[in-house]
View 1 (cartoon, helix red, strand yellow):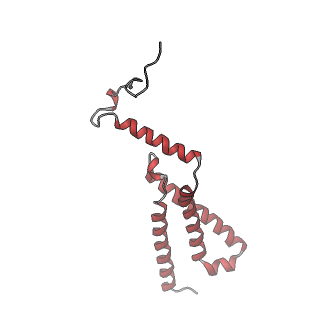
View 2: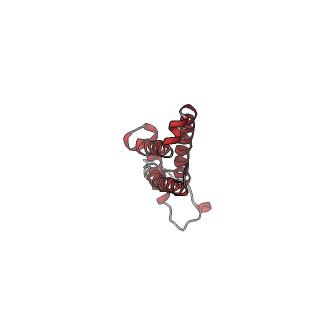
View 3: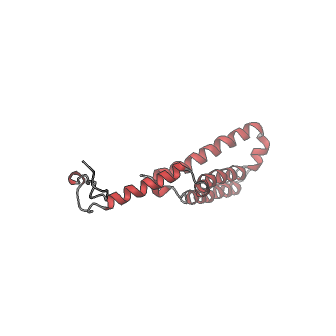
Length: 139
């Protein structure tokens, strides 16, 4: 039988680990390249926690007594593994999609920097080929 002290200790462990998982998810190297980094951060964190809950739920269905005895540590371990994999895979993989995302992001940022900061978007004009640094076209 669980006491109030055990319950509060379990909640404290879950809260501390949730905070740690949120901090770990913020180290995703692709976050600065998205248009809404906060949404992507929350999405990656919540998706990993949702998958951990589904996998742990299946574990509870198959091994009820063992899962009851190992709660919450086995769930938290699974959550740490899933969040860690979503964060560290971009550091280790060098996929074309990741490179393209970083490349497009840097090109767009460099093009945006060409315009004065106080220029309203409606008055911005399209740059000519010569202004962009291309040689003049042969006619």
